[in-house]
Length: 285
Image (cartoon, rainbow, N blue to C red; front, side):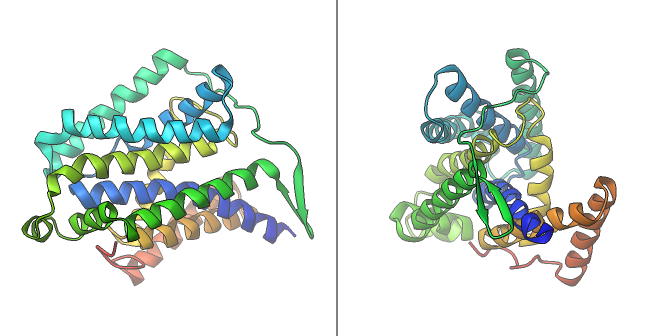
């Protein structure tokens, strides 16, 4: 029973890591830039859902959709206004995103204060499957998360715009030679990447507390997932995100919190020693 419950909890957390890592990978694949502000977009997504749901009394799903659209637009504008001169300049781009992260985090502190905020459950009650008891709020979040991921897959795999974006991720120069206006896809790629981080924050807002520091841990886990999955590999990020969530849940079941963290990082180290390029290698999008 406990193992089955841990599996369910691990899949929920794994979805959070998956969203973060896929968005992080998308930004890196398009711009060849490590976005250190990625966790802050998760935090802003959580605050966005909190404000829209509790302040404007919108339905939770409407709040998540509006948060996603706003994050994509704001992310695209930030890329065009701030990051455009630094495209494919890894070092300077990384420094600028660190500064952007500090601005966003301290701005959230000024507006919302340092105290964590709790968002009301989007749906009450539980569902029992055999011996497993699952809060309906988690089922609600998981179903919507899977829907968003399915739409992202369809967009990247079948739409003309999505295929062009994948081509830019695969090889910027070849995509340009083939007539794809690759530079148009920088704001789109960055906007989609941070939009996924914002959706992760919005979906998890009812399950965890919301604060200006909410994005720190998800950002760290996103780094781990991206490296485990293979730098630049979206399928690898999916596999690694779910695997990390399950590993974390199982470790927390059998060990204390500090010991569980040691076990998780030990597993990561062993996997990287055995598979230096990650689970699915590099660049498979």
